[in-house]
Length: 185
Image 1 (cartoon, rainbow, N blue to C red):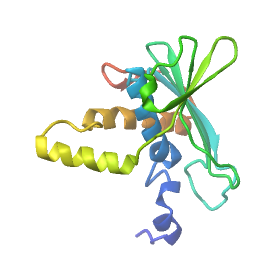
Image 2 (image 1 turned 45 degrees about the vertical axis):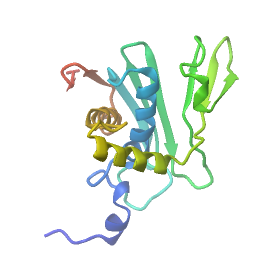
Image 3 (image 1 turned 90 degrees about the vertical axis):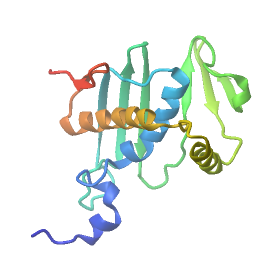
C-alpha cells in the first residue's frame, strides 16, 4: 500500500500523476483568451520543451516549460513559464501584421513591433472575479450559456493536455481537430 507523501499532498500540482503543472494550471486560462480573440479553438499540433531545472524536490511536472501550438488558420500560440525565483510577470501578447485583432473598447494598449508587426496587450479594467460570479448568477437566473461554457473549457483543456503530452513524450504531437484524435507518427 502506498504511503501518503506530505509533499505530494501539499504541492500536488507539481506531480504529473495528480496535476498538469503550469500548463494545465495557467495555460488553460491563457489559451482560452487566445481562442476567443482568434475565433479558433482547435490546434493541429503541439510541441513542448522544458524540465525540472530549479526545484530538486522530486516533482515530475516541469518548473520551466515552453509550449507551442499551431492552428489551422495559420497562427501559433506560445506559452512560456517558469517557477524559478526572481522571475515574475504574466500577460497575453498578440502580434501580427494585420493590426490588432480586437476592438479598442476592450481597454487595450497597442505598441508597434518590428517589421510592420503590431503587439496588442489587453489590460483588464474591471474585477474579473466579480465578472465571472455575475455571469454565473445571471446564467442560473436566465438558463443561458455562460461566457465560458463546457465546450470552451474542453477545448482550452484539450490544448493544454496536448502541450503536456508533447512534453512527456518528447515529440511533436499532430492532432486531428475534427475527430479530436492524435495522429500517428
